[in-house]
Amino acid sequence: MTEHDNWWHHAFVKGNYPLVELTGDKYWRQKTREQTQFLLKTLRLPEGATILDLACGAGRHAINLAQQGYQVTGVDISPIYLSRARRAAEKAGLLINWLRQDMRRMAFNAKFDAVINLFTSFGYFPKTGDDLLVLRRVHQALKPSGLFLVDTFDPASLRRVFQPQSWTRLPDGSFILEERQISKKEKAILTHWIFLMKNRPCREMRSFIRIYTKKRLSRLLVRAGFRVLKTWPALSSAMSAPGRPPRLVILAQKP
Image (cartoon, rainbow, N blue to C red; front, side, top):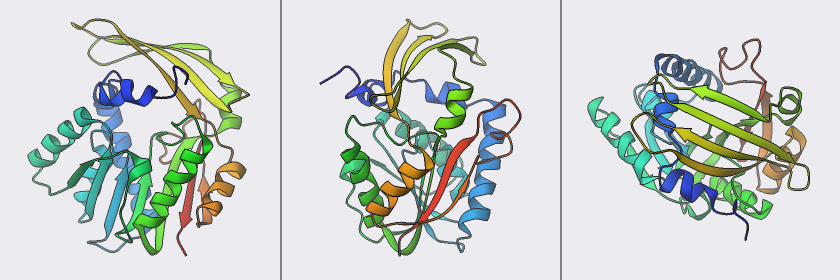
């Protein structure tokens, strides 16, 4: 076992990764609205359709989709994020089913018209077999002809703009330092995070995210039983703006 094997436990279960602080400002709220519009146009689901937001975090996409009349379920491993999501949904007067689950152990059976997995929330586990297991769980969760949309890194563009170190300043004056390296052996990006949060002790964590090319991820989707339909370089115009690296967005379907 390496220090990266269960990194997600420290990041999300213990709450070391400050997701809400990072994505809670005006810019991110606008970006979330744009991304939701992309999802509506791409999935083309009828009102009242069932959607699973897999690795939903604090619920920013799930809440926007529920406001459009969809029946939404949010699944995440973090009790901290889910608690925030519940409060936000209640404040908005929305009924959303929030569940704390490991994505490898979901047991839904033909329940959803669509599943979304956004914001680089795939490839967290040390074994490729676990990624395949996640995709098979998603396949099982979908109704026949159901759609799966995944949004992650694009490795080619990531290498072009790769920076071994960067600082991010949050709206409240906090800072995030990221020290990155690309592991060719593991085909992953390894990151050491240092969080200098305002009025709180310094925290740090390490992360492991496997990098998939379009070809590799498409093959894995096919192995899980999917048919790949289409790919895009971004979920919104903000994410495809000049200076921002293209993403890998794939739409697949359960036959």
